[in-house]
Amino acid sequence: MGDVNLFNETDDVLTGTVTITDPGDETVLSESFELPPASDDNNTDEEDDEDGTTAYEDVWTEPGTYEASVELDGDSEVQGESTASTSISIDDTSEEMLAIAFGMEEFDNAIGFSVGESLSDFAQA
Image 1 (cartoon, one colour):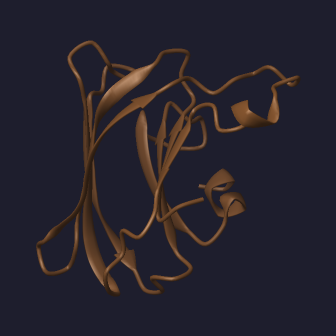
Image 2 (cartoon, rainbow, N blue to C red):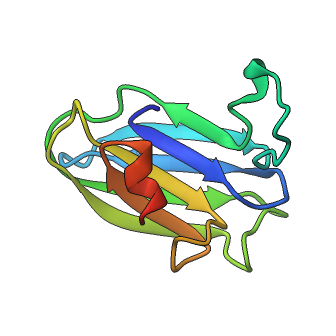
């Protein structure tokens, strides 16, 4: 798991851009992504374990409030949504991570944001 983790729980390949701005209003992450759907196949090879996820390391520069946004490309959308953004608070830059989930049932929105210290924190979002 990285500082920022994308999870695709839809049946479609999603493409777009994720942007994170730090408390000093500097862009610390601006990356295009192509995110395949999560695999339901229980017999996946080890190299395929990362299906449906993308992680970005070394994003947090200091504790504080970060702006996180996602913009999906042209034909990509999740339940009619193609953009989402939120402010998040990072208190411990070495422990906390951000999950951005597309189409995950545990989130109220089609594109959800959650901060936690482990994968299990996101499952309870």
